[in-house]
Structures are given as structure tokens and as C-alpha cells.
Length: 145
Image (cartoon, rainbow, N blue to C red; front, side, top):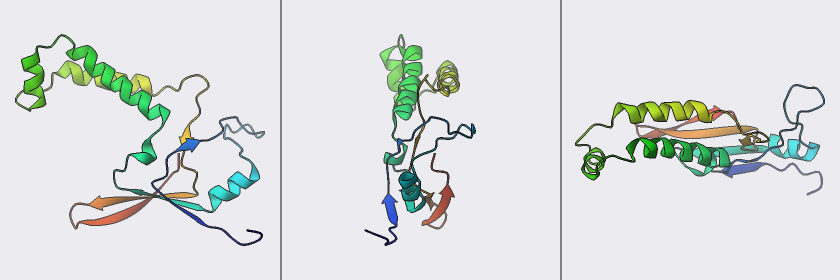
């Protein structure tokens, strides 16, 4: 492309690996190569409402598995009828299940040794969420991490 400016518009991009080695300044932030920085600076990403793809990552799968495991551990010996009644909203979810999910969510926040955060490689991420009051979409600028 030579010296032509290139702009990239990403729609529902998945998060990607981002190096987690601290840079020479010691501020703990990764220092990607110059071409990667330039590509990120020229990219704008858009997320549509509750699209799942931009939130997919190993970390989100680990979190989901942890939360499902917490529910399973507390409902393992529950009678079939009770599970059926809870599923059909005829019976409330027991408080101990909520408590175990809360505890699992707190414990999961810790990163595994050697894990790097995933991020959407863009200068800005515009998250378009539907406003239920007027049935229109509103764009919010948010951090790419």
C-alpha cells in the first residue's frame, strides 16, 4: 500500500492474544512492535448489542465453566422434580446456589500463572446497545481490553 493511509473497521471482532511481557519502562504494559501499534491506531471496532464473539476467550470459557461447576456442585443431589420446578420457575433457586456462584465469580478473577489478557486490537471500541425506551441504538466508546 506504500504511503497510502489505511483505516480498518472491524465488526464484532474476537479478542486476540496481546503480549503480556512488560516493556522497558517497567509500567507493566506490553510494548508491541511498531507496525502492530500503527495497525491498532488505525482500527475502530464495533460491537453490536449482546454479540458473543467479542467476548469469547479462554478466560471467558474458564469463567463460564467455573460458574457452571458451582451450580452443578450445589444441585448434584437435588431431586429431579425440584430441578424441573426451578427450571419452569415454579420454585425459587435455593440461596446456597446463588452464594456458591458468587463465591466462584470472586475466586475466578485471579489469572492463571503465565496467562495474558486478550484484547480487541483497536484504538477505540464502539459498543452499540439498544435503548429499549426508544428502540434505537446508542454507541458507547469503551476500552479495548
